[in-house]
Image: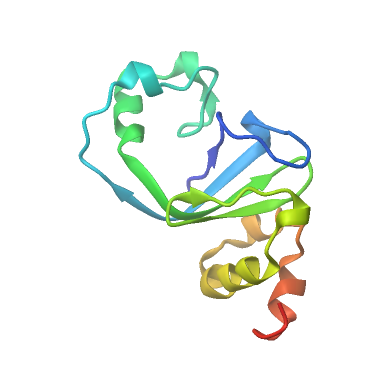
Length: 138
């Protein structure tokens, strides 16, 4: 199983970033695009390989830059908050702006595709609480 850590995003609640944000891709696609690798190369941490960016060769960057995460989950390892990625867009909002209906719908659709090792890290909002609600309750 491959999961990634985030180098450029931060948890909107606790401000954790880098190795403290875990990305689990559910659906990806590869695009044949021409990218200026130097402009997108990770500065400090390689999310694709899970190590310092200075230890990663340019060929790995070329491969990684072509991968688009269509659907996935970003988990803050510090506070346990998780954020869905829907249609390539990370939905990373502070708790007061979170839409439980969106989160519950996301879970119902993808719950069976999320490994238990990822589920146990998803603490806030509690996935079981969202799943136990009937669709009209959110």
